[in-house]
Image 1 (spheres, helix red, strand yellow):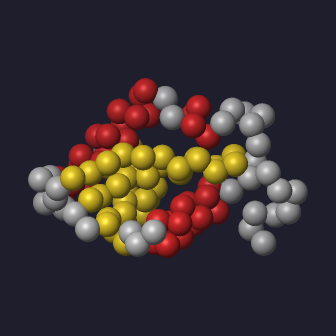
Image 2 (tube, rainbow, N blue to C red):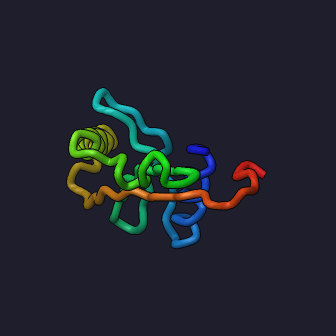
Length: 105
């Protein structure tokens, strides 16, 4: 389910003209699902996919602690790739699967 959401988000970004510079980037503080670039702007995307709302919405899973870890991971990426003077934005993508069909098919 998670991989489907990440693939969907990646294709959406590419369709909007972004190039994907990294996927599943890990640092000592955490992991970012997608790093994408459009011109001089970098975005760091956390993808949350759910089959429904029984366990909460995707957005509800992004806590203050998770946000802090995502920011630290994004900063780590920019520093390690010598892009620390570039613009970066942190965003998240929420996908809720509501169809009874398999999301893998």
